[in-house]
Length: 120
Image (cartoon, rainbow, N blue to C red; front, side, top):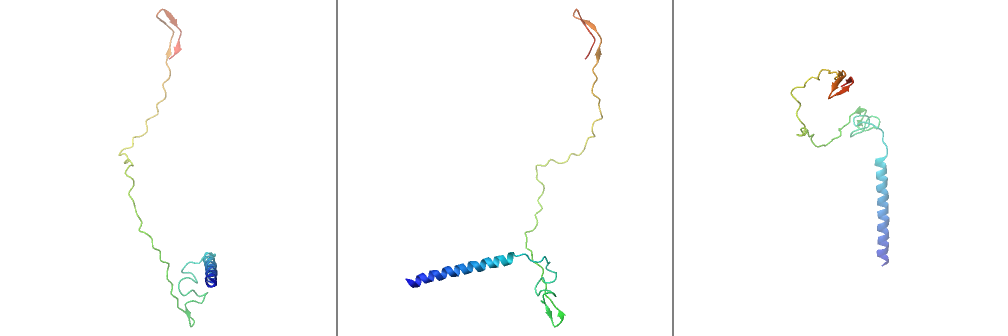
């Protein structure tokens, strides 16, 4: 019994150490780094001349590999079919037409009554 108890304790310690190392690895990769492009000094395989990579016997030989980006091919979809086609002829705007002025109707007799002059 004692042996299985120590085994579980050892596994717990091992799991705790693994979790701690995992957090350290995540923190290291997530830490901010200098903004250098892959072709700048220190990028690619072999480093650059500031970091000593790729230099042999005073001669600069370095192997630089650009980043490989894999993406799906672009899709150019036709416009939706519910758009109406453009009209073949655009009519010009109608000419300005002033509003109708009311007409003056002079006073007159209607059905035996006098109607004074008024605007229609």
